Amino acid sequence: MARPSTQTARREKLVAAALDAASERGLRSISMTDVAAKAGLTRGAVLYYYEDLDELLVEAHRAGVARFCDARDDAVATVPDPAWQLAEAIRRGLPSGPDDALMRLLYEFDVLAGNSSLHHELVEGMYLRQLATYRGILERGIASGDFTLRLPADTLAMNLVALEDAYGLHITAGNSLITVASAEQAMRDAAAALGAAPRMLE
Image 1 (cartoon, rainbow, N blue to C red):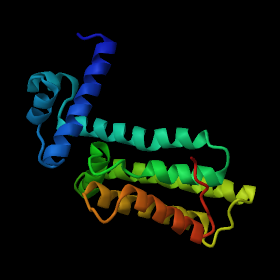
Image 2 (cartoon, rainbow, N blue to C red):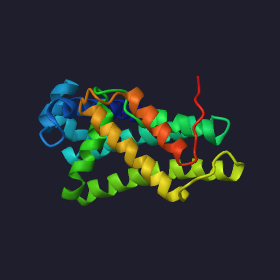
Image 3 (spheres, rainbow, N blue to C red):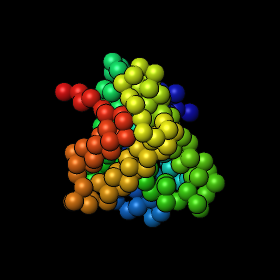
């Protein structure tokens, strides 16, 4: 049996291989054989670590949530006040560009959510994390006097998540009319128009 450290490294390698395969073939088209080929392993070796493809994809989704939600929340926590925090949350909530494989996989999970109760649960869990990030910042901004919202904090948080997901989907789909920079600016402008003006970090 492989040592725990080796198992962890191998699982991380397989998650990365799943992301690569999903990026090339699409989440609904990949197989264990595709993942094995990307990882340079046999299909049997992959099955040693993951019982089936769905289990591996769930792990990939969790890795995405960790990057997208945990890393963003950690970064926001280091920023001094709600106006700066909001700018940081918006910046980190968008894909890095059309080739952001991890974000593309997360959006594909959204599409598949209706076909699997497990996928549905994962997608809802991520949405609640996104919502909590924005709602927490808005509530802190109200308490500090930085924000005077024209909508309830819950409603504005929902709108920011919706904008984040919509722009992110266009970016990862390769829509040349929406860039990361223009999407970020549009989200900042929308928040400011509704009483939560972000303060940009240099």
